Image (cartoon, rainbow, N blue to C red; front, side):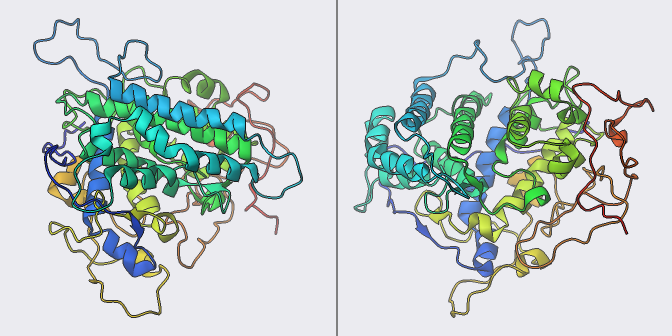
Length: 485
């Protein structure tokens, strides 16, 4: 277990008495070159910085110097009665709950449909009508009415990100781009000084447990109520159809304890943490989903998908075979978020830029060679005067070293997850722009014989066969890519 020498790195706040030129966020990413510029922008730096802050705060904490303690490590669990949230967190939680209550005013349409439920548009219309008043009700007036050198208010800029975080009423879908918009909403609040700065990471922890997790619960109810389609999903080629952040923060919850958020570890797990392979066991998922964000997200997959876990979620199953522990998974998830969310045109194309997340080059951005992946993004035929920067590796920057260095921008096929999905014949990776950057089904383990009814043999431990009929056993099935010749 190695500690990374990481300097304290937090998202910069705007002084309370400072005049600021707020801007209504607008779309700036129109083709692949814009994605390349985004990855060298100040907005990108701020997004990654905020994620690192939140992630570091979710690692279990050792007793601090001077504390009278028996040496017990403090774990952070969902719905912890011992946590007392400050007013701003409680009010944001109430805001999310108010949005959830609007679902009752827009019940799903009972008519025939193929994709999505059109009543989601009604829910979105009601939210659009009330969002301004809801922000006034649940956020401090002095924050929303900050002095501006323009006609745009801080409230208008925050509202744009919040409205973009619930899914598309036009396409009736939801995905990681909408999740990113909610992260920007919270990051904007941080920049405006809505949250107190704390040395032990408690403010960031409150944000994750008291705001982000309730938001995810709202989203899951929206998905179930209105059968929202995955936005830009690649099906089994992607990590998750809808969300990514709970896998980052949830893996941090099970990582080894640290003394401060700046001491991130890269291997190991809490002594009492479940085995990563337990994500394929229904009973373990049910036990842990109420306490941990990773298992909560896995539990939602169990709610909406049927069949063997390795078949409908092969990348998550692949990751569950990591032997170096939850900290290794956490590090890999951060790298994967950069490659599969922030570097993908279909995901970030709708992200708007204003004064809180700025469409300007970060002068500290390192220049590295652009990858084949980003070069294959859609191109615009129109001439442009934008800079053409080289991509940078965010993990190699001094302030970004919380997750290591040397990450290839071309994808997430890192050694932190070796393939565990069975296949007799390897399936070629899809080609073309915007395809995912790794496939887990390398030919490593033979498929169980046809007609067998057993848990996947590659998930066994100690060479003991899994029982043929238990609640954790998988039904007999064949991988769809395993065709008889």
